[in-house]
Image (cartoon, rainbow, N blue to C red; front, side):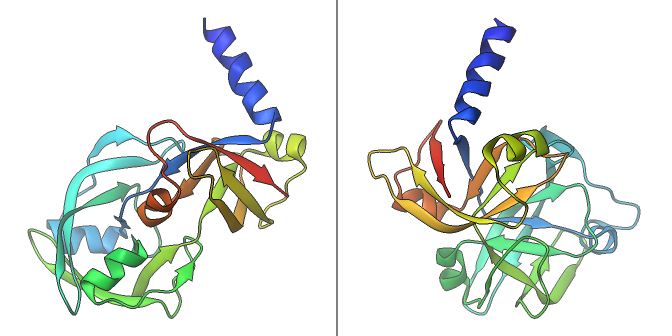
Length: 203
């Protein structure tokens, strides 16, 4: 059975089809900000593994505070990172009164500002709030098979009843990745993405 599943997954990948995952609003924290928000000596507590190896949803939650409102109990993903980063949809930004640029994850220089609130303290970000650019995580062997390169921009057609084509999707190649596409809830709603969904990569 396992061998059959591997064959099916391999056939899907060779066809240029990628599983599409919807990424809700979430936060990545530095070690320092974990200590401020959750108390001295605090660490992130893994709750559930995510599709990308080594990444996990933590038990911890934070509140997001913007100029027009707040979001309660927003997910914190682990492990910790060199820079604290908040990833929102455009709709989230409007609700919160936050101005955030469309960026690749990790590109936070000069990005949006807001306050994070935890049970033990607050952190005011002078930068770090972004709307994440849609992207595809690609392991090297799949990139070679599909002739894709790191940082390449492609189109991806959603295989749904509303087959929206997303343009300017970033290819990210890394040996630690599983083959997945990530979009936010605004993009998912526009394309009627629900449950298991595949996207067709168009170069």
